[in-house]
Amino acid sequence: MKFLCIGRNYVEHAKELGNEVPEEPVIFMKPKSAMLQPNSPFYYPEFTNELHYECELILRISKNGKYVNERNASKYYDAISVGIDFTARDVQSELKKKGLPWEKAKAWDGSAILGNWQPIGENFKKDDIRFKMLKNGQTVQDGHSADMIHDFDKIIAHISNYFSLNIGDVIFTGTPKGVGECVVGDELEGFLGEDSMFKLIVQ
Ligand code: ZN
Image 1 (cartoon, rainbow, N blue to C red):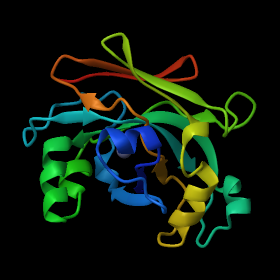
Image 2: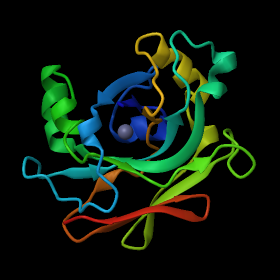
Image 3: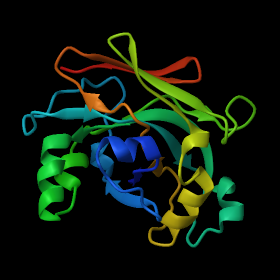
Image 4: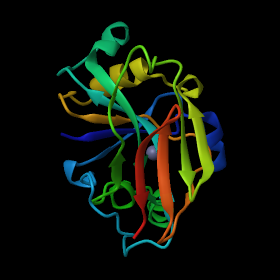
C-alpha cells in the first residue's frame, strides 16, 4: 500500500503558510513504512526541531483503478477517518527553498497516523463531514469537508491520472488551517464529528 497526500487543499491553510492556492491538487506520497502501527509509541524524530501536526480527513481505497472518472470516483473508496500527516516543518522549509522534493520532511517512518475507519454513508456523508483535533484538550484544528478546494471525487480522479489506485491505499486529503508545533509530552486527539478516532502522546 501507499499513501497519496494532497497539499494546500484549504484556502485558509495555504494562506497561513504563505503559499499560493493551486489550480490543480498538489500531490505527494508517503511509503507504507510511514504508517505508525496501531498501539505503537510515536517518537519525536531526532532530525527536526519543528515538528508540526496536520490533521486531515483520510480515505481508504476499496477498488483498484486508473483513469477514474470523477462521476464514478465515489465507488473507489469505502471508509473515512481522520489522521495526522506529521511534517518536519523546518526540514520542509529548507527543501522548498532549494526546490527539492519533500520526502525527508513528510515521508519518514511513523509520519502517517491513521484513526479508526468508519464506513462512508449514513453517518458520514462525504460533503458534510466535520472533524477536529485537540492538543492537550484544546481544539487546534477544526475543519469541514465542504471547505476543501478539491473534493474527494476530484482528488481521486486527478490522482488516478498519474498513479494506480490499489485496494488499501490511503488518501490524505489536505489540512485545514491551524497547523502548529507539538513537543514531547503533547497529547493529540482526532475526532470525526464528535467521535474520537485516535489519541497519541508525543514521546
Ligand atoms: Zn498534509
